[in-house]
Image 1 (cartoon, rainbow, N blue to C red):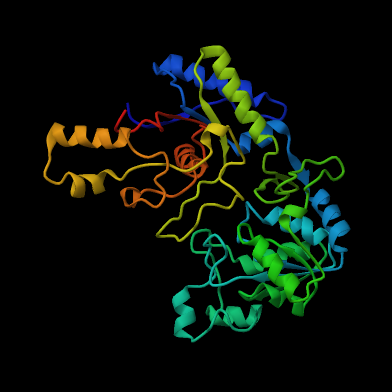
Image 2 (image 1 turned 30 degrees about the horizontal axis):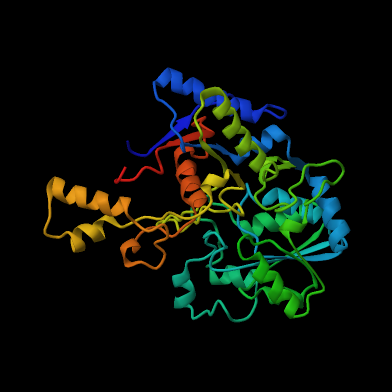
Length: 393
C-alpha cells in the first residue's frame, strides 16, 4: 500500500444541490468503474467552492455596500493591505467603494501579502528606497517603477485598476504605498484591514496609533445583510468573484458537510473514512513568488481524525546514522521495527528532524488543491488513500 491522490469527477454543482450525496455517489461510482476499494482512514475531500455554491452562500455588491456603510459610516474609508487580485478582491472593493464617499487604499510593497509583486525588490535597492520609510503617492510609485506597474503574470496595472474601479462606483479614489499599517491614519481613522493572515496584528497596530473605527474583512458580511449569505467566522475573507455583481463567500457549513460524507460512506460501505472541505493549498511558487494561500485557512471544516500534526521518523536519518552498516532486507526490517516502536509524540526528537511540522489538514488540503487544480479538470472531489500508512505497516 502507498499513498494515492485521486481526482474524482462530479456533476456541475448548482445552488440547492445535496453536496454530501453528490460527493458520496461520485466516489462510489468512481470506485466501481475504476476498480479501487475504500479503506479505513482514507480521506474524502471536496473543494470549498462547490460546498458554498450548493449552500447558496452568495452576496451582492449592494449587500457589501450596505454593511460597509452601516459599520464604517459611509464617508472616508481607508483600506489597508488588500491583495492584488481581480478574483479575490475586485468585487469586494466594488462594494466597499459603493458604500463610501472616498476610499484611500494603502498598498504594501514591493509585494502584497501573498507575493504579487508591484515592483522588483532589486529596483528598490538600486534606487536606495527603504520600503519601511515614508509613504509614497501613486505618482512617486510610478516614477519609481519607470512609469509603468504591470503584474508580471496577468499584465494588469493594479494601481490603475483599483483606482478606476473605485471611481466607477462614484467614490473619490486615492492609492498610497507604505508597509506601516498605521500610515493610513494620516488620511482617515475609519479603517478596514484587508490583509488575510496578518489582519489581527495590522488592526492592533492601527488601534495603538489612534485608529477610531478599525475593522477587518472578517467583520463585513459576518451576518446576513438584506437576506444575503454570510460567513460568521471569516466574513468576506475567502470570497471569490462569482459575477460582476456577486461574490461567493467561504463556506459556513464545512464541518457539517465533512461529517455528512463520513456518516454516509460508513452507512453505505461500512468503511470509516475521514473527510474535509479544502480551499487554497498552503504552498509557495519559488519562481513566481506567489504564496497560494489566499483563503484564511486551508480547510474550514474536517472530521476530528484529521486534527494534529504528523508524528514521523526520518527514514534517511535512521539509514545514515543508526543503521549505516546495514543494507537490504536487514536494514528494512530494522527501520520497520523502529517505526512500530516509535513514541507517540516525537516533538523535539532528533529522529524527526526534517519531517514537515505542519497541520495534517494543511498538508492533505495542499495535496488536494494540487490534485484538483483550479481550472477545467472537473474534479472538485479528491480521494486520498492510505495517507496514514507508513513503512512499518
